[in-house]
Image (cartoon, rainbow, N blue to C red; front, side, top):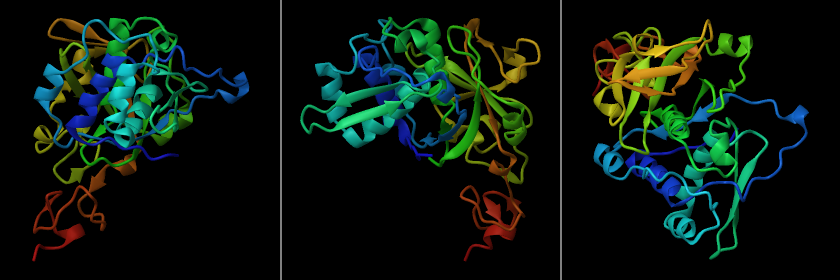
Length: 305
């Protein structure tokens, strides 16, 4: 699995900018292979760090209400944007396409200055209208936002997670009972609209972290110490209090906040992605000290000299 990382406010801001200048993939989609090879892999390695994410940058530079261009990536505006930081923007486009385009399709772009060809693979297919060249809808804005937010963590680490929900046509993202068993810790619901600046929201689904626990995915699990670190994602309480399911499905289909309804993404984790002070391993999320909390974990990280 290829490791992908986004770091800081610049990357999420650029996500808004690249969509604004036109990355509609209609002209660059490759035909999918035979149906037998299209089994969707839901276990995504996330690595979008929230460190330094700028509330101001997101609120004032969100996508315009005009939506995404359907002119494809082969435009002068896209080339200008991409060439401002090819390595960084290549990584960014991997996430945008992974969220919006289905597995078996990809988007290619040739840098006119270097002749290098970049190819970004689809996976989840959350926005089939946009992927097919149509103007983006509000529903697609919401699901693209939710998908990007679902890949946020505090440390820029690559943590596998189960992504659950439906695309804008109501098709369910595939999952199995084996997947639910492996990714058995319910985590959170993500929703909002990066395009319109309405807000970026996360709720907890199930139990949060206790005083001895930590996780690189703490934005959804939340604890008293992670709220500010996850800004501009606003923690809004429990998914159960804000969102609804259809029947017994393991994901939420709609979340309502401040009178606005959003299409969410629901996530699950493997239990081992939640670390315990006292398990004998000094994790990324733990520090030395004399106590039993992650920021002062003597048992795992020793006392500070």
